[in-house]
Image 1 (tube, rainbow, N blue to C red):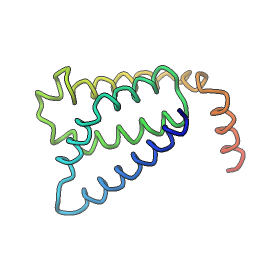
Image 2 (cartoon, rainbow, N blue to C red):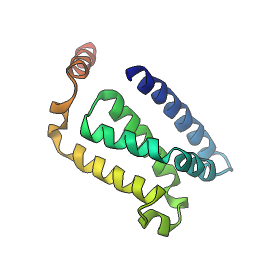
Image 3 (cartoon, rainbow, N blue to C red):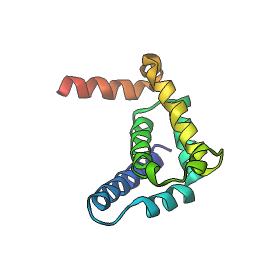
Length: 126
């Protein structure tokens, strides 16, 4: 499972970089990004919910990239779709729920033990 998350993380990083580069050009990245988010709607919801229920460093990184992609396209989504319980609306609600979870600073206590060690090593290295 860890390997799948690492591969997904690389894909999300690549997609985020592509969207960032398109955003600075004259073309709008919103249409392909909305299509991607729609095509992978169930997987994205699963990842956001998984990050909320059992936080891990990889999950936090995945969520950060997903939220970044959503932020790029939110202005192009029809307002009715943002308020509906389908596709973008459900994803938006999952992001709000995830944000509420991480506003509580105790979420770090729920990190897996190896993630805590990784955080400590990163802090010590800096």
